[in-house]
Length: 585
Image (cartoon, rainbow, N blue to C red):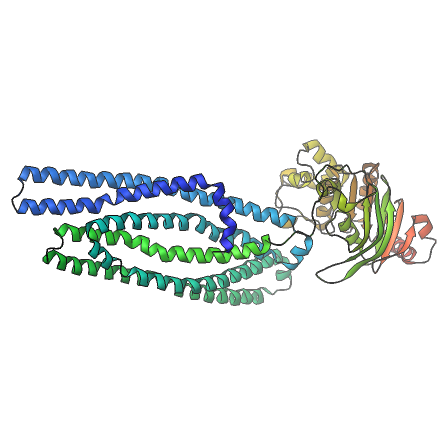
């Protein structure tokens, strides 16, 4: 139960609902227990009538009165049970809502390193399947536990008052049941943990398969993928069956023990009646009803125990992630105004997941309103620089200054809000084109959306779609071409009119003519803003105020377009090659 202590804060939050539900539960059990008491009264009335102790009229009157009491008590107990479920089960939904939000908010705080080390399917499984199992503990498990305790306490008080010796024999099998439950519960806990792990593996495999369906079809490996899924599904099935086998012992054992109690009531009660220790056969009937009323609560003990064990296994998996401290923390609470001055001072950075040293002593500065272009071969560290400006990672050594202030001393949310980032991999959401562009500015007007699309040279493409800007995109924008995705991503960045614009090779999928038009529009848009353009084409860098060339995480060339084409090196070689390719075409 140690792992489930994390939920105590939610139980305190909804303590009023739980207390009210508990009171209603006790009241419902009290009214429910009127039935066996009046059944006894009916037996007593019949015995008195058979002994001619009462008249036929009195017999009918007392019989009707007892029946009405039974019906009335049952109706009240039913109504109270309804409100009990409404009160306590609702708490489980509130806890589920709060816990999912807590997990999701924590996910958003975790750094990119976390997402590189953990699979998406596993993350999804913990916020869905695992939280659902925890909800069963926060609702049904608690409700049935309160119900069982209330029924046992009230019923045993009635039973001891009526026939103490018979009561002791009736509850004799319960300690045996407790020992069996304890042993089975431990095994259920172990097997539940394994089942949840395999569910995560299945979720991860299917998520990756659906995301990479284009590659799977292109390589014609559907049979192999299907075979791998079947193998994993079979392993998961075996673990589920192993869990079901151990869970299957609960109900048969309970029914056996409850049946034993019934036999004890009939035999011991019968002997006591013969010996005159109990006055009426109604007492035996009353106890049989008590035993059968306790059957379901006793049966739920096993079910509840199973739920608790599974919930603990799931909460443990959730806690594993909740205990991970975010690497990137916002230590500044006051609002920070961002102007756009950026400076790297002897910056070193190594990726933790691969141990690759991406940057080695980088030094450069960009003033507010200037444009910096970064060129270099694949893996030279270009994209890393942009990620560090947005503080998606923290550097190992050196300093990054924005507004002449160390980036760690700025309000993280103000910093990122002042940046418009167009990533290399243009990610679009499964939503309308308009909403994807408005993602950069949620309160943007339709005119602003259209203007941003025009500046990104994608407006003409959008209006050709049947639903125009209301066209719903497939997952990750799969219904669009690479160039269209990049241009919508550009529109999303520029619509918010940020102080800093970061373009990460975002024109690689467009032709040179479209690229030229976009760059001309960006010249107007970026006036007074700090812009950093990462690319592989000289055409995207030639108009920049400064150009740096990276190689193996170091700056090997720095200057303007005019100065660099006169200097032997990577930039001049690239310029001549691309110029030659253009002339050839």
